[in-house]
Length: 507
Image (tube, rainbow, N blue to C red; front, top):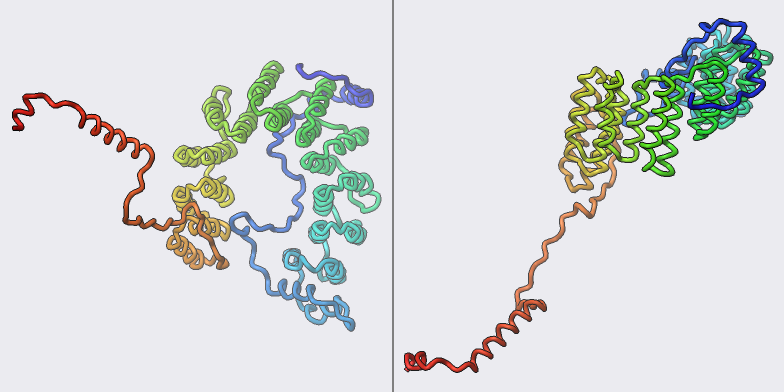
């Protein structure tokens, strides 16, 4: 094994005890890391899409009315619960309705805590379940109001479960409170009635590693090793976390511990380390990227670990980031030698790189190859918008318009940002008529675009024609010298004695 290091005594004892009591076949290979998903379907508040808002169900008029009531100034005579009872006592509450109310009242703040209490008071007509609790936890988590979240969790003791757990862990880690996330997992069964199990542990470790908190994740895994012994999947996530954090030596150390503990280092761990090596080379010395990557690939071959599609995706994406598009294309053509085939990520990365290199014809060809390979569904509005932004950035507006037409032909309806990108760029190029046509097209399609003042780029502005003044032309120094030499030659020839024959003929 090319990676070697001493095993920590505590982990060595645990590994020896567990491996001696369990057959080897109990360890299952982890799923590919690139396909890791959260284990629980926790709710997320819809965010506007880069080109067009994501399709959402139409807001219920009742939800809009409730939201407007929450956004009103508090009344001295009536509390919020009393006002809601007066106006909305007849409505039927549903989880979807509550989610829409929270989405539309982002500025209500802690007023939504009173709304939560009003919703809770509607039992037994409406039972507040784990899904509803997760909506409120996610709402207050966005505001980083974790004191209110504690009150909500206390109210939901015995009801809250996986969805609420996932929402809170996600919000804590995204807010940079990794210590609180670990502490919550340790005390949640005692204080909130949420059962601790391996899946929830894996979820916390996954979220910590995804956001670069591998140090917290590793300490947590080691402290809970007696209760939940780590498997290869957890170890792969920890290696990935150290690589996300840019700690290559720590990732290699953990890989050595895995190997000495009886775990196999698979493509998932090697791909994470390969990506970290390429990232560090890009930051410090891009010219060493290919040689360092080749050394790691040799280690993979020596360890008997096969390359997979993700290995090539890591190499191709990092080569494209340092503008070595030609090298990436050569690697793409050699994928079949290792029995690997390009996926949607491979095609998208190469298409973006080809467009950035102004190889627009090859970029279009890559899109066609992607569709013929069966990955046309990955060409959504977000990817097309990225292509358009690149093409407009390199001033290939006409080609961007052809990709725009292809986008509409594929069934991707352009949104606000797509139209605004083109209208602004066309006005900058002085093509006001085409920009006006696009604006009218957006209005016909129901896309709400604000009228703005666009300026023409001075590079593309029509320069006024300079009227030449009629008069004597001023000679340049070379022209003056030519005239002077001609004049001097004539003077010299005037002193030359003419032949007698010519003089006689002249007489």
